[in-house]
Length: 56
Image (cartoon, rainbow, N blue to C red; front, side):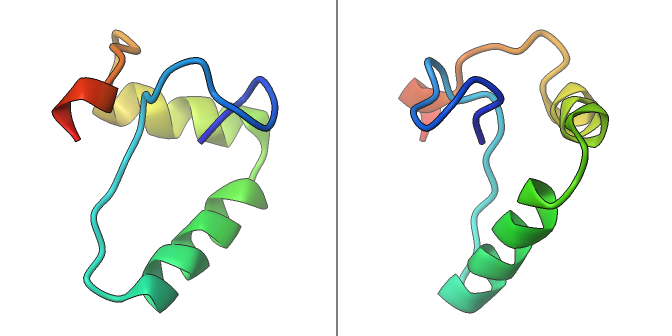
């Protein structure tokens, strides 16, 4: 998820899904939310906004 544009500079939130349809549904739900809700979601999982890319 990117709050800066099309290509994020770092990966700060991720989830793993078995079914791509569930992943797409979740992504649409997140993208439909406000910036504040997105920030709350990230802070709930990764309060330090550490780049998670290398751990994927």
